[in-house]
Amino acid sequence: MATTFEVVYNSFYSKVTDFDLADMLEDFASAFLFDLLKQAVARFNSNLGTAVFKMNDSESQFTADLTDLEIDIISEIMVENWLKPKLNNSELLRNRLSTKDFSQFSPANLLNAVRESFNLAHSRSESLINKYTFMVNDVRDLI
Image (cartoon, rainbow, N blue to C red; front, side, top):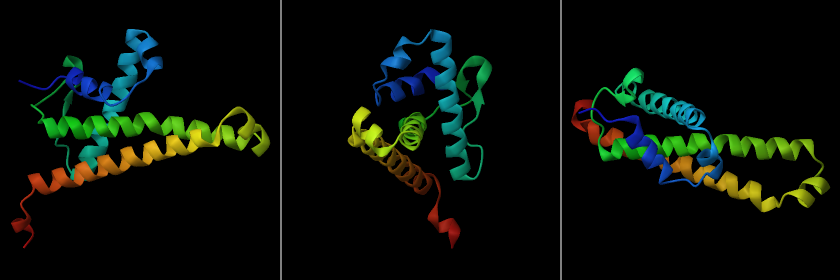
């Protein structure tokens, strides 16, 4: 039985707390999550060099069963993609306001915390992809 998108979404939800996402209308939230999912699958596939993970959009599921590790990797990349706009927004705000204004209205630690969270998510997703690549490929084939 093929893995549904909902399984991956639940894995993503377990890694983030986003009250804005919870407050969205169901159609908007679904579209947002689907965009994150598509980006994550595209990146995962590009790292593997082939389209391993194929999606059946009309049935909201993958064409095959995903392992727990594959679900974890895809949801981790989704977290990274979810954080990216938050990082970019903070940097845009910082560029528009003077240093005095920025420090007055937004603690400098906010930007650092978002950047650190993004870097952690990116490092974790890259590490998981590398681990997965070694697991599914036979190193003896390289000799």
